[in-house]
Length: 286
Image (cartoon, rainbow, N blue to C red; front, side):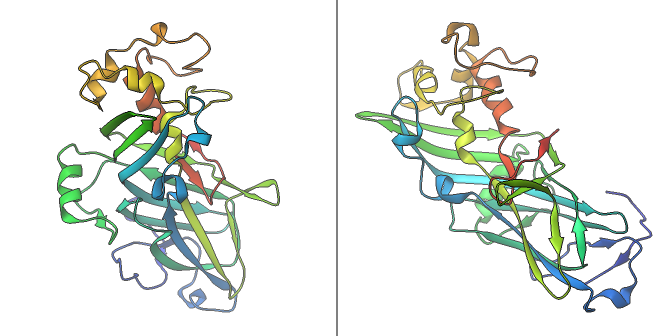
């Protein structure tokens, strides 16, 4: 975010408060005018995070559920040819709580906001604790500091495996597009006097993809087989001990990713593919 910006502040903070809205080349009188509209910023993990991923979705008959899915996201920016909008805040959200989860609401001038980006980041001192998460979750995320923590289990018949994984690092999602009527449309549009919801969607099933490029299936078997001590809990250290060259040749391809040689590094690379836009819309992860 730019320091000492010349942008004027537009609209009052929401109850989750503290967000800065930067409106370039926008007069203060535009706030609430007929040529402005409201944007409601939300996030959601959809049914796969809230309710679990059924066996029908997996290629190896496992099923999985998340007991906790903590994510820190924010630093939202949107631009068009005349204006720029930004929310400097980040939010700690537990996506296993029923959503969508409202983050903040802002007033923007009407028009096409075609350049949209947001970030998943390690927790910051200023990160807002969303009502879906609690103080204990914040303490655990600050211990990293982490950007994502997931806890859950996978089952197949009598087999049961738990996982508790935390990840740091930042992913910047740029050039976000949404799918409207089967077409990809960049960003979002605000109509005069209208209201638009912008959703930062997280796809939890991507944790179990078996390829970093091209078509991927959901699989858990390789993760289950990594449980070297047989205690039913698969750790990131156990994943690190599994070399990708020892897995089936038609799975766990790394595409353009470099330095991904073991199953832990593979799962960490999948983290950058979790973020989407308005449901099935895509962004370019960096």
